[in-house]
Image 1 (cartoon, one colour):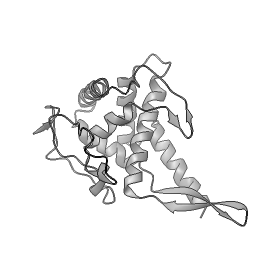
Image 2: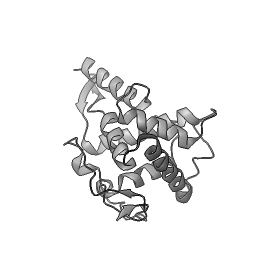
Image 3: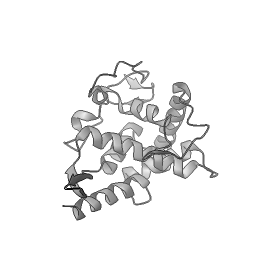
Image 4: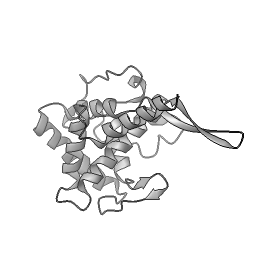
Length: 195
């Protein structure tokens, strides 16, 4: 079975051993779970393209601020699914590769391994480097890819589909033009300095 009746997922593999169990590529005609993945840790069973579609509806949260509010961020699943389908077609046309494999490569290259948390000790706060769990790595990678796509499309001539395509393709090739790859490198540098 092909995802959205266009992408064969039988030959796709995840190279990062830490993310293997957390990136689901189970083929479905329509990538929509209808809320069945609400239980804790069940996101790892949700198809990776569906996770992208659900994140497209809430792009604006950067920390505790809501910066971006666009017509693309409608929260309507069908609208977001159409954006993702057009993005996948464009990725396939541009790269000649399976778009789901390109998306998985982009997630692998933009998923940070280390992060920084704050420990309060004796009234003073100290940054402490921590290893990120695989589930959080995938969540952060998808969020950063969506943020990068919206930054490329918000108040620009490019639309959201072109922004997503350029961000995903750049991240899949591990290029520094991708915001997600930049943020990953920045996060790992901060963690190294906080050790």
